Length: 149
Image 1 (cartoon, rainbow, N blue to C red):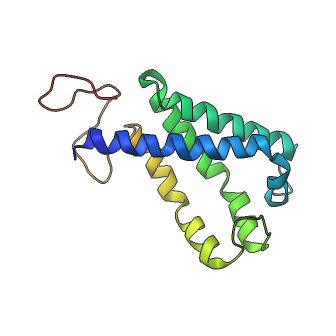
Image 2 (image 1 turned 135 degrees about the horizontal axis):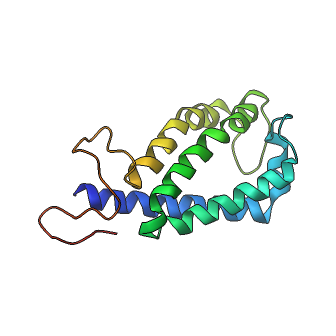
C-alpha cells in the first residue's frame, strides 16, 4: 500500500469517526455536560459548537482544497477536548454506554496524541514517522502523474 492509499483510508476513518461523534454531540448535547470542566463558559453551546465543527471537518476532509485545514482543525480539537477527557476519567463520571473503568479511560487518554497524529498525517500536514519529504495537498502519486484523493 502506498502512502497515498493509506492516507485515503485514514481520511475515510476520520470522516466516519468525527461524522458520528459530531452527530451525537448535536443529537444529545446534555449527555456531555457532566464531563465539561467548570471553567468552560456556556458548556451546552460549546458541546453543540464542537459537534458542528466535527461534522464540518468531516465534510472538509472530502475536499482537497480544505483537507489540510480540516486536519489541523481536528488536531487542535483533539488537544482542546483533552481536559474534558481527563475530568471524565479522574472523576469517574458515568456516561452510558461508555465504560467507566480505567481499562477504557487509560487507553483513551493515551491515544489522544494518536488522534492528533492521525489528523495531521491523513491530511498530508506531516509525514512523520514515515518520512519521504514534505507532501503537499494534491501531490502526484509516484509514477502515475495523477493526483490522488
